[in-house]
Amino acid sequence: MKITGKIKTVFALAIAMLFASNVEAQETKEVIEVKEVPNYDQGFRLGFGLNGGYSVDDPYKLALGADARLQYDLSKRYSVTLTTGFNNLFVSKADGDDLGFIPVKAGFKAFVWNDQFYVMGEAGAGFAVTNDYNQTSLILAPSIGYATKYIDLSLRYEHYSDFPRVNNNGTLGEGVGQIGVRVAYGFKL
Image (cartoon, rainbow, N blue to C red):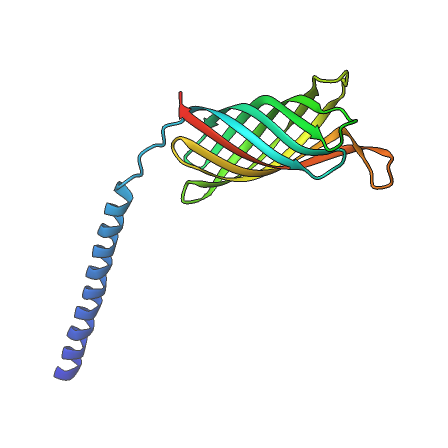
């Protein structure tokens, strides 16, 4: 009988130790929950950029432009943007006319790595302003980029759905694309 009493005592002591270690784990968990991450300061940023690119459709070859971008930071990782400026698509032959237009785009930017590398999608309209061409085009522009406190570098593809192009067989079509690079300086407002 004495052996059974000792077994009961050891068993009761083991259960008590399990509860004691469980209580310590809960106290540690509560300490972790008390520490909160400080709230991200939402706000506006303004950036001015220079754009250069290469058109993937004839008759255009080079693209140059400048823009201004207003960005509102929803959180540390997500922002909405509004971009406008002036872009010019240069023709590859001397007998064609260049196409200058004013883009107006809204976008969404998501930082995906180290709060510096991002992906962004923009959509908007391009309003032609040169050479008696009055067509307005839909613009779609996905991009990837790298941003610091002041510098923003990005690589993007822009598609202009309604601007004219020359097809491979020499006929006219619609839809011009360009691969571009943007270098910008930005600051908090």
